[in-house]
Length: 228
Image (cartoon, rainbow, N blue to C red; front, side, top):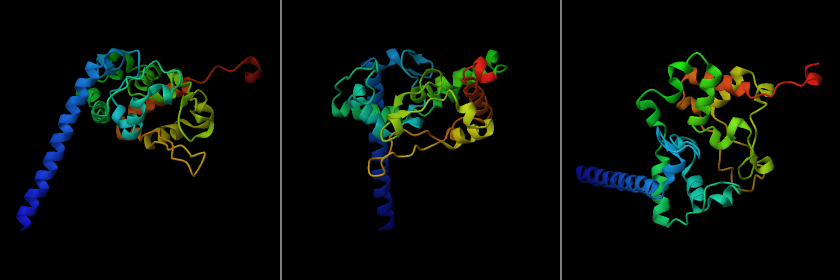
């Protein structure tokens, strides 16, 4: 009897994996078919108009991906991404595909931030990390913020341009490494859908160090009055 139970459980597990694998492949086909790779890059393949999606499954939850694909402008009013009016099965397949993109492409070969010319320039290397792993997808170009999030103060993800004033380098590195969940403005409303993942699970120590150096470099220069 135990053997039969085991075989049945194994069959259900394998069937579920097969369905997920088929849905992943379907989602990948839709990703290309709808021209998503015209604007978005996965690894070194695709466009650069939109955010890099190589790590999208690591940094965004499936619920948010599903909500975004239903109607991008409803979440972010000024987005360049149109509403594709996707059918449910297409959207679900795309979510399955995207949620499985967790940065493996960067680890197959030399990561774009490990090019020889960057290894002696931690600020520039950190900038490449910021843009390629997708920090820019939430914090905006040069960390200027103002991207939306639900149920947070001001309704936006904060700017990073002044993090050097609020954190030591070690504190900032630790925060990035462990991730951060924003405080809910309204405890009775749904939790914020966007939170920072624990980047220490993906980025190496020297990569985190370079990222911190870049974030510190974002602070605007002091005016003569401030310097005085």
